[in-house]
Image 1: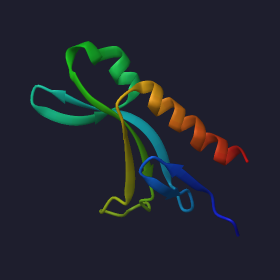
Image 2 (image 1 turned 90 degrees about the vertical axis):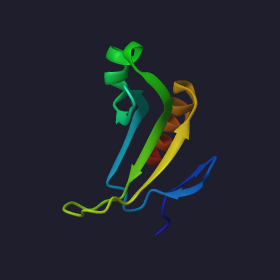
Image 3 (image 1 turned 45 degrees about the vertical axis):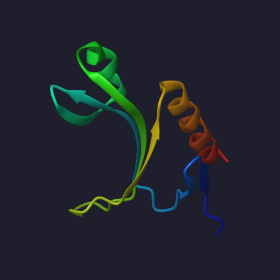
Length: 93
């Protein structure tokens, strides 16, 4: 079987056994660094400091305590959206 591979700027990422794929922002809110949804950032972004955007490839099985994930970081939302479109194309083909 030919597994799908995403060729990112940080190297190849296998899409085999991928459980979740999601985008987010990493922000600083009063000294606390947190990962928040893009929707949350659209609503409250002016109240926090943006560190960067992320695309998370999560391979963690249900019930597992240790997270198995690969995270790509982006400086801009446009870069994130471009990467998301490239991954989506792999699922389409």
